[in-house]
Length: 437
Image 1 (cartoon, rainbow, N blue to C red):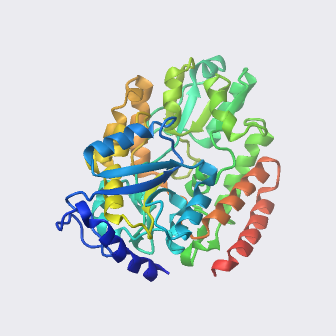
Image 2 (cartoon, rainbow, N blue to C red; image 1 turned 60 degrees about the horizontal axis):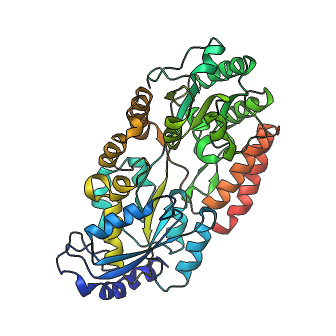
Image 3 (cartoon, rainbow, N blue to C red; image 1 turned 45 degrees about the vertical axis):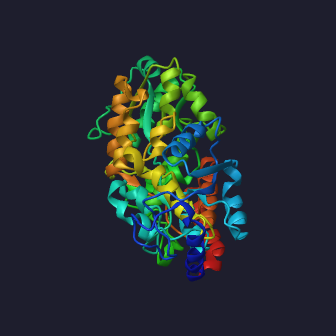
């Protein structure tokens, strides 16, 4: 399948050459196209879950078109929940639209294996060292690059100073060398709740693999799968049992609520109703506008464990059937690499954590990091994305994996025995993955 995909790229090259140049800034790809020095005259279709108006992607597209006036961008927004299925259907049409699409990083392996992404190795592997290693690696499958990262993520421990003071609790250190333990957090969150906080502790994303994966990893466990193609379930170790036992105890002991959804956690903390919360940097702009007196610390670690934190975000991939591959490549490069760390990070008004080193400096220069807490957050984010970040498992069976894992976490949250939940989920995943064996 991949060989057929590569062959189609040669045809695409011919369709993009009208405004371009023979000169090239990259080696020819497997499909024969390059990233030209001079722009072609072309129109590209771009598919994203972000909107031009509400997410202010219009500012980004306007900046690109100012820098590359002969390349017109038709930007299309699809709801997040429909994006993956829309990409599958549209690429399968083989009409070349969209030319570029937002690729959820843990799904890139599957996109490449199904022939839904163009091989970008020749064009963009030269930029590997400009990105956080985990962000770049998220686009690699079978030693080839299939998508280029434009954003990144991590997690922070936020706390409500007033609620901690009311409970007589010290504020956690912002130093990555004096990281709080989960065990201490559990004890302190219970005290804060007993002292009047509605919620002692919240995960921003209850029951979701993205945020919970680092818990067993901190204890020496695997990311959840191993073997050839990461298609062997691997979450029955003592590390996973211990991590899930602790997760279940949060709700059994009333430290965290059973009935709160992930959509309700940010408003709960911003409303001053939670003492502690682990959430991403995207909470910072809202905290800046809130009335909460807040502080920030590194994500905790288990006693005797090794710090590990969630990471991963979005990359850009190219449709292997695109008829405008050179123009599409120019757009991808501008978004991820050009203009001092990528035009996406530079021109998107809302702060977005960059995947590149240069882009992170643009991100940290945003006004949201000007306060003392913001400066603490910037230091922690820089460290975590460079030193403790752990990617979600890379496997062509990721969709089945994530679905089953999320349900396992939810079952434990609702009182299921951790070992029994692990055994049941392992059996279920083995069955689901038989089609890939």
